[in-house]
Length: 191
Image (tube, rainbow, N blue to C red; front, side):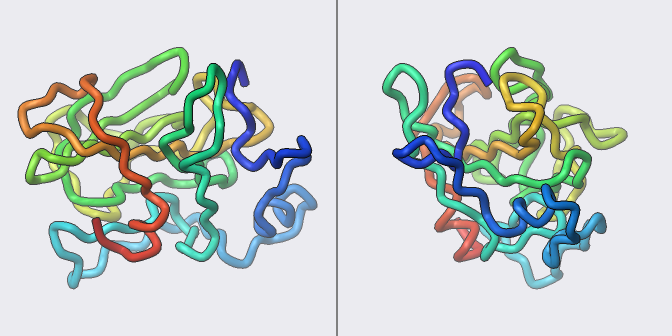
């Protein structure tokens, strides 16, 4: 996994995985895990936010935003663990800015919010949804790809790395902004 620390590592070095991940590793069916992508609710607004991994509810998330990473940096994202191939969907409405392959993030997608002020970054995808293209407008729940372990992710721990950044409306996809913690926003269902 390179210089990254596994997202559930504790100070003692032990791994503290969510119960659903432990059940999956033991070969048991995880009660919240499904392979079906549910359509977005018609009641969603432009600022609505949904958990972008099919079958995962807010109660199954872990706040890994402030965890330490290599070279003294913070994670500035959350990791949503799921079985490889689990559908990844748009967390919010937006426009696909870039489909990009990087050494760190593997198969990644950058989606800009409709007002241009928030960039969503989806990383470590196994693949992209068929037909997904740069410039495409997406709604919450639209298929983006599937959970994987591309880039510097650990093969034994497939997950979606989700980051959000507040950016200037004219910022380019690669220009960083102020990190936003997706965890409390996903729990609240809005940003």
